[in-house]
Image 1 (cartoon, one colour):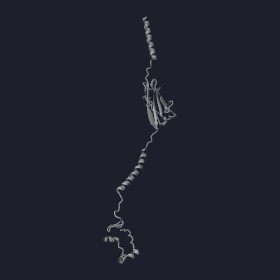
Image 2 (spheres, helix red, strand yellow; image 1 turned 135 degrees about the horizontal axis):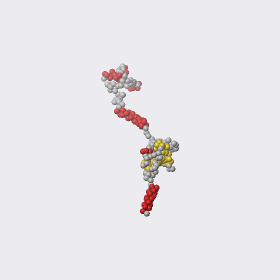
Image 3 (tube, rainbow, N blue to C red; image 1 turned 60 degrees about the vertical axis):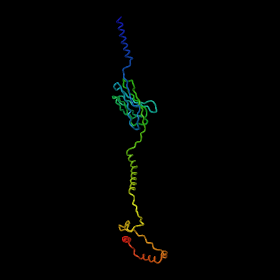
Image 4 (cartoon, helix red, strand yellow; image 1 turned 30 degrees about the horizontal axis):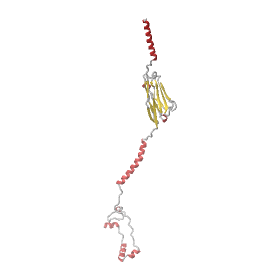
Length: 252
């Protein structure tokens, strides 16, 4: 009787262990995928959409990566990139020829590069990583990409030309004004109509004499109104030979 009870107890233990092995959760670790929440880029730039993952199991040939895209306007996500032992970039479509694999599964990296970003690329990008037997956890992560128009850039040559057109005329005008301020034209202090007896006019020191003004002759009315003494003096001066002006001034 005692031996029968012992066998029954052993059988119950074995049965219990079997049930635990069948229904207990398997000791499989989870996988975690991480991506930046937001990315910003300008039109025409090359954007790296990073994706990293951590897994207790070492990546094998069964590991796979999928990238999907959902437009900003909404709609179902569309898978445009797949990696399984090697990269399969999209041959055509919106991302045709513009996706490059930059991941390294051995280092937990599943990043891609988007070349020549356009405004149509705005939307949500999802990175999904599977690495059996790790099937639990957070195998996906999302990134919102915002592409904006590129701001106009000013080249250095344009700045130089603009400064040349502005600064050179301004500098030239400034120099002219300064020259007029510090170098005024010489003004004659005496009138040309009057000269002192010892003044030497322009040209006389080089032997040039300006033309003498014509002597005014008396009219018939003036001669008629003259008295006899004035008339004699007028005719006497008229008969005298012309005297050199320079000689007369030297005699003074």
